[in-house]
Amino acid sequence: MKFISKKSLLASAIGLTLTSGMVLAQAAGYLTLKEVEVEWEGKADKKTLEVEIKTNQDIPTDGKSGAFGYAVLTDGGNNVLVLVTHLPIDDSSHEAMPSGFHAHVLDLKEPTGACSGANFEVDLENSGKNTAFDADYKWKTEDNKISVEKVPVSDLGDAGVESVVSFTLKPILDANKKPTNLCVTVVDKV
Image (cartoon, rainbow, N blue to C red; front, side, top):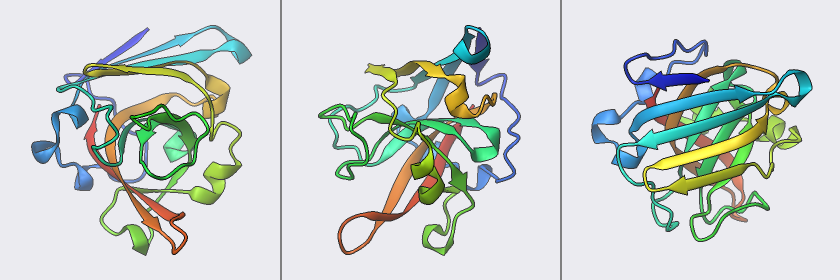
């Protein structure tokens, strides 16, 4: 088991800077990370990851708090595990209602001009090719805690956890209300 607290910050191996978008002083309490626990179980191709995130305030599950989530950053921004809500965009067959929360494994990239000021942009093309993009991982929210378990480490490219973040998501939509860009701004990081 690996325990991460605010007092023992992980050094991020990601080449993209996170600090420019951190807005902790203005962050809603549910985006302020209080404690993170990361645990690996099993061996070889049976190895799984479990993550529990505690925040400073209850996590809204009414679907009315906008687009936000929590991410486990791995492999320099590739194979990133996210627990996210971004209603009314429907890109998962496993969304929980009314919250809209669901899991993805995504690839991130440096922001394009459409996402100016964001820390990352979701690489929509490569993320969609990932077989774990629409994975049905066992996750739950309870008060100020969100957790996910039994995530196959192979879905994450067998990479280690570099950091855990909370984020807001700004979708850029086309005329048909489909996302062309998804801009990610980090709020807090452990």
